[in-house]
Image 1 (cartoon, rainbow, N blue to C red):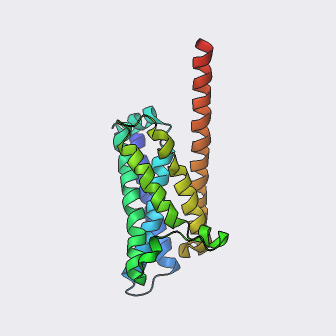
Image 2 (image 1 turned 60 degrees about the vertical axis):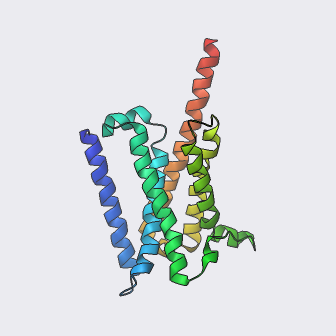
Image 3 (image 1 turned 135 degrees about the horizontal axis):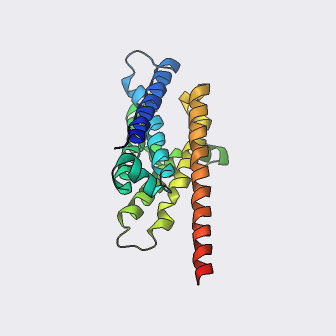
Amino acid sequence: MSRKGIIFLILIAFIFFVIGALTIASRFEDGDILGFFVRISALYGFLMMAMAVIMTPFLAEIKKVFGKPFLTVHHIFAGAGTLLATLHPVAFAIQVMDATVFLPSFRSWIEFWALAGRPALLLLYIALCAALLRKRWRQWRYAHVLMYVVLLFVIVHANLIGSDFSSFWIRLIYNLAFMAVLITFMYSVLKKVRRAGIQGGAQ
């Protein structure tokens, strides 16, 4: 691993430490370990998935920085994010003893977006399955791009009803992270358009 890779990992660890500290400082009732886990799994899960998405256009750079193949690094972040994103509703369902927390709500437009984490979990697994089938399904990228929709649903859900988003710093960090995801998406699109133009010109 390069020096830049080590610095990057230290920076990630520092960000995670700050988020954990802010989460404890904002609202942590004595003995409410499960409630704390519900919140921290959502926060860490979003960041891990966002990082996995942000690194997508930088295959060569990631390999150079971390000294590992892009897919290895990408899958570590994506796998950890998926696990935490799954544990968040599972822990919440246990906390409230209600399995309906996994079901999307269509009772109103506002409620759909307030509970948008529910359909986001379903879309997450569709995107995950598409990636697992990449060697057998040539069009897998069209389903895997749902990850951008997943992160959109999650950030709206978090801004509307996320208990930790009452903290200015938490709100700032996560909305900036989502802006970075959007910039990555636009960069990826422009990169593909430019590549298609070069190939078309060569013909």
